[in-house]
Image (cartoon, rainbow, N blue to C red; front, side):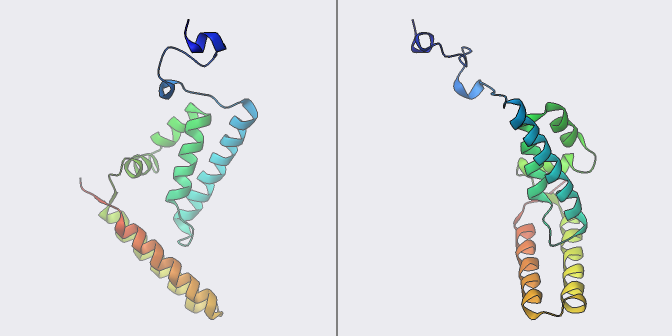
Length: 147
């Protein structure tokens, strides 16, 4: 008799602990679905608002869906706009050069416009420029995906 049998361990399925997939309880599963949906929405907004990061929210949505709903997770990874992006980022393959150029160009156009034509407060202008520098450094530090 093994220790697992004596303890009455219900999670033992004969495989290693890393092979056992635990499903969260129903309320927590719904919480993850709501969090994933919210993260996806913020990530989509981040596509259009340069100071709002897209990638972390899309990755968070993928993580929430992976733990709560196979259907939503499959849908997200199969999505024609975000699926390849998430897969490539998670696998460390990088992002295409065209995407890097587009992201950085749009980022700086919107940040400079906002900082100097919309926001009159010097401290906020400095913060916007620092955010743009940080995002630019991050994007440039990612691998460039070669086709």
